Length: 138
Image (cartoon, rainbow, N blue to C red; front, side):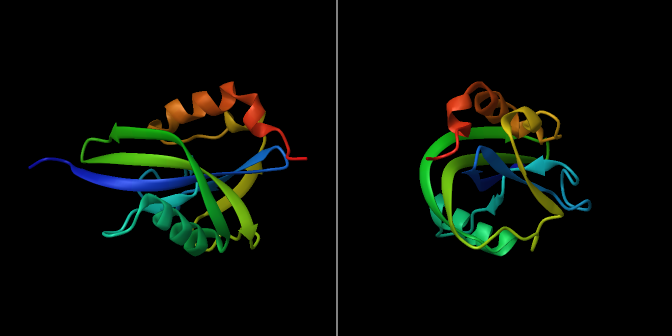
């Protein structure tokens, strides 16, 4: 029996030089770790549709989904995740922890102080190496 492949869509939401991160529920797989908001793609959904739905359910916000920033496949033993990270623009609502343990806005320097799942390592290196992404919009 092979490992299950789980397709996940996640959003990179920047605002005023900060990035939105969420914390996984303690009882979940990788519980307590921080991540980028999003979730599992359902059958028949595009990654973009999935992300809009997940951000509405998880945080109560509406976003427009922009460019694909990073695509990562990572094996966790019993499961393999295929993650697509998209740059998103928040256009309605303020984040609320509807289906996550917590959320916060962090600046680039604060990002490394948070524990993330191993699958996010490549993305975290890229985000911290690209300070231009963090500049507030004028």
